[in-house]
Length: 459
Image (cartoon, rainbow, N blue to C red; front, side, top):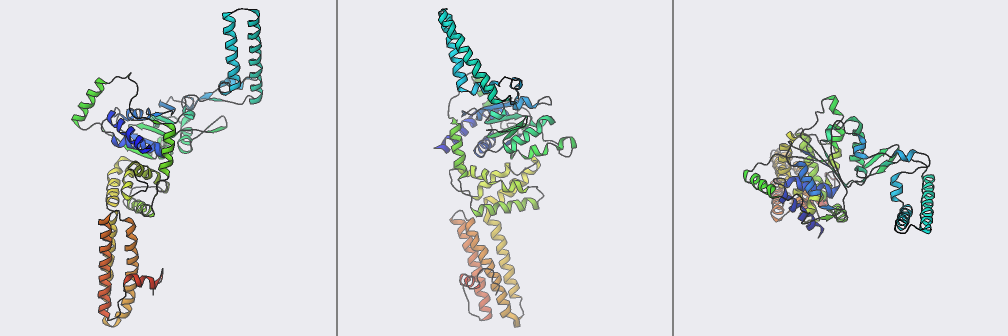
């Protein structure tokens, strides 16, 4: 039920934005996993438009949006100090707004004033005076209770927002960088010595360039960039017919029309997040992710341990959107938007993910088959007088290969792949039969030989 609602929202936004399916899916994944998203693309590539079309369908979620410039300051993003809260005998406006007793007294005073206006009798005037005195006395009590603590006005700012969009993030000055870094990383904000948790689910950012981290002046942006876990590179609309269709749709669009179509409430989104976090990640998928990590590092793509250890919520979300309660190898292909640091790395990362995830068994089977051939060759090259010792060595190596092949079953995602594993096992078994026959010693099936040797036994 919940998954269908999210799929419906994704489809609706896809109808509104051309050639942005990957971006829209990434927006959904971010919201389902509380991740942050950076979108790289030229000006006018509908980066912010796609985000805005999606987030308006999350009902009940408070939104914040800001275009950053060098002149942007912390107050514009996080709120400003309520100077009234520092005046002795005074209390901040937000405290008054949130205090139900004070608000009730204010309403009583307003009603008494209206009654006086309708009937200017002495009794009405006395009632207004009494209500005014009660309201003033209670306000003084609140001021005494709160002790003139510094208070930050955060209404409509990031500390009260569930979904945040910051355009041209990297143009932020030094004054807001640390505050943004803490907000992105920890979902916390500190001002005037007071640290508060913020409810932000996801930060969405966009820019037409990546900072030059080799430049000392821009290197301070590296931590901020690293906290934007998901990254996507978008281009202009490439298909001519799609461009023309979107142009016609824009010309007919009624910007004043109320929102129609599927929506999601904030409460439903929170329930979706719980379902996503319960999607199982098998050990075989973790091992496949480790294979991907090592292969990328071998090819010169930097992937930090932090990135490696934090991959699984993203693939959980992808599996959930596909209607599965367990992650499979092909879910890891979505990590092409998680593993890159610069767009130049995208082709290499995509190639590695496709090769290892679409056919995770292929490379492993080839590797083990080569090991089987090498083991047989070493045995066949043994001098005639040393065949018994050679068979002992062959048995040890064959059992290790047997264990590796049986472990491959966990990677098999269908009957065809299971048959490939069984075929490799049969090749090894035949090689073992042939080796035993060459020595005239009793043949022992590999499963029995493995049980006899036991784990770690080399005899």
